[in-house]
Image (cartoon, rainbow, N blue to C red; front, top):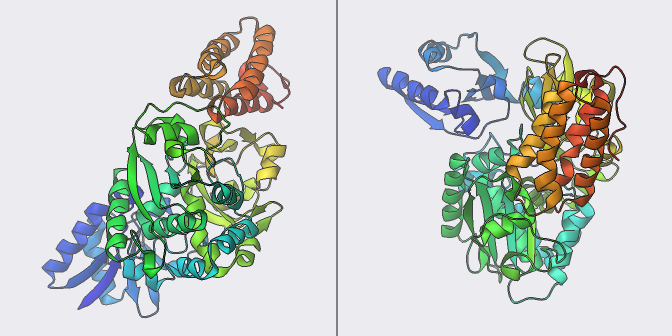
Length: 518
């Protein structure tokens, strides 16, 4: 008997025993004289069910989870006998949490063998590149513009406009840089796509290179992601051997090649100009703008810098058309967003859905409320520098402009949930402390302001001249927001001011102590 099993090799699944589960299946099968074809796929993103094991059947894949190594002997017996098991989840595609999603960027993640180029192509891979080559560079850029795709790294700048700027800039050499320095708390979408569908990154960067006239690409991954680094390097070698990288890509007249560069883990290197400094072999320090990287970027040449999810979305846009992607979403936020739900939450994981779902739906219905069973008190959206939203704002739709209108940020799509035991004054202090630790030190508002911020919050928490120190903190946040060179110092006021505005009681006040930063 031969059967095909899918056991994630995703770092999140490995962290909770996926490797041990795979080894246990191999041992149990050997003891019974069976041959199991075990595919180490990417995670489907249902992290509270990991390790989630899938078995291929005539009716499609059937899932079991969360599986431990100790569960395997009895589980395999039940599978062979066709009997139900306590860990049976049913047909994978029918799991409600997965079925409700709109998977475009993550359409293949958890489905394909991430090491197999053939599997990637069998599931629609490289259709986008083929269409881009047929359309030509100008029409390819126009398709990305018309799709409404915006940067998924936090800034939300229109991707196609950035490409158009680089394409129009004359230079003998241009570059594509993928920012995979995923450092926000509660985020893991970049890592998931690189580990679970790495060829989509190669295809997206190749399309970008051909569109703007770049022949070289760099994928900058933080050193904390060794699994992602290894998987990406393997995929690059495979794509190059198959003619999808290097000279005459896919038999075309275009050359494009790429490589992985590993960062040392500085949070500030998620800022595009600090990332360029690091790529060039220097300390990650923010550059003043202008000039913009689109005009003078890596090694002084015109450079496209996009986030992982932005580039991974390009192939589906080129494969299915700009209109098909633009049909999802609301307002100026088009398409889908891979939302990462983490923190004190019952159902944590990656949930891809069209823009417009409310924060309350994400936390209460999709996330299932807190893991502790206590009431949700606050949700931080957009990483460690995102604003804290109370339940009163849970009707806010997940949309760039809607969040900005409530003094919030979508950022990289990370949501961290807190129950009613959280101390919001300590959270505000943490934001200032985080900024002080991670600042590159180039600009005074960020370098000095964050340190003074920690001291000021400490005085407020001790009750020392509270009203005067609140005024100082508000003024300090205003200076940091508008005077910092980059978003590290510029966004630190968001968590601080939102905590003060929405949770004044944690700072010793009975009414809102300040208006949120404007």
